[in-house]
Length: 432
Image (cartoon, rainbow, N blue to C red; front, side):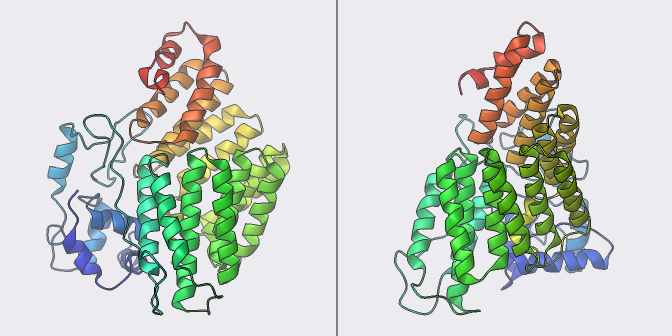
């Protein structure tokens, strides 16, 4: 990828989050609706998005009158689409379970190499090797490391990134001052950035099946949030803790962590964050087999989500769109044993998912396959599982792989059906 230096120059001294907020304001001025965040800005500046979709094009041309897309560092739409239509090695694999919106982002994807190896890992910004002696702390470098970890995880999953991210976290820990940070100080901002880094590394451990490591990293982030008196970071830590508890069968802990997160989020001023925590609580109630409490929490999550995203919502929440909420609902119905309803939600989550979030597309496709198999629809389940397996050529996620292995075991009772046998004998499944 070639970085978009022209677009980066237009951002100037503003942070990616501040620039994203200005993009959203400009969109409202002309009646457009875009969900621009710091992660999207990073994708543009890195060159991953070679040409924006039509809505973003109108917003950018409104923001910078008199300039063309070329002046903003973008390539012609026809050239970008033409490259993908010709079957570029950089284009992600397409399956029936991963549609591209007709006006979706025309973007370059860092897919697996021609030799079939894993995608290249992102370079992390250098952190000083020891605690600096001056009052200046590299919180911006830590925050940028978090951003790059999340960008890579969105597209390729956690498995190939965890060890490197752990090294970055160890370096960041060494930079933290030993005294309690003063409110508004550089030290407090560094603590907040290090807490987000611990959560990102914890998530990589979670997605790659290292549950004990994930629990430790989440606890570290929670302690950091309490030290820095940061309610948004505290709510984020409780959200991840609740999700991990649900994934490891600790239903009561999932409910308690989500409820604690909702209390912390009340001070953070972001309805979407409160919505996510309500959905996490619903997952815990579903695991406990309480349909009434599950429905109540899901209704709360939906109502809060409908209020929209505010400029004050944290950057890490860019993944939490309608697709994610619908996918979490699917997991609730599956836990309650309503696999037909779960499959409907999972299918909708796949169709709604932004193609940038390739790991989540694979996750919800695997969820769909599991729900269809549990509902006694083996041919549809095998087709969905095959689609998820194809996505694992680009995504490295132990969690998704484990889901597909479980679905394969369930489907063996239907051996002899052509769709089922095609999945069970898929080389990608056998060689895993």
